[in-house]
Image 1 (tube, protein in one colour):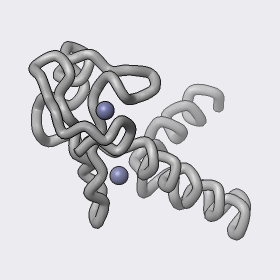
Image 2 (tube, rainbow, N blue to C red):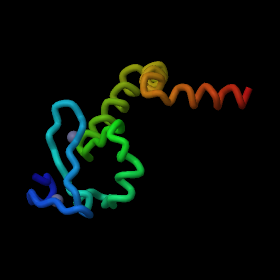
Image 3 (cartoon, rainbow, N blue to C red):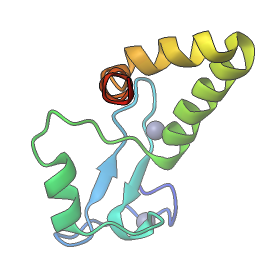
Length: 99
Ligand SMILES: [Zn+2]
Ligand SMILES: [Zn+2]
């Protein structure tokens, strides 16, 4: 059942997406998301079944964890979590270029 409109209906162009975050069982219609997602957009981003889709609540949670890390551990914490998230490589590449 969709967490936004409480309707269990799903159609081909307005499918119900289930959150892949561990312990979260929220579901949302593509069109109940903001911004709304189309089937084409969803399939191009998450269509390979390997890419998890997180509901807006879990996306916020992820941001909040990052912000708390940043707040508690300063730059080191931010760098550590950036590395574990896989974006550290990007930053390393950027540093190499600027040196
Ligand atoms: Zn809905
Ligand atoms: Zn979720």
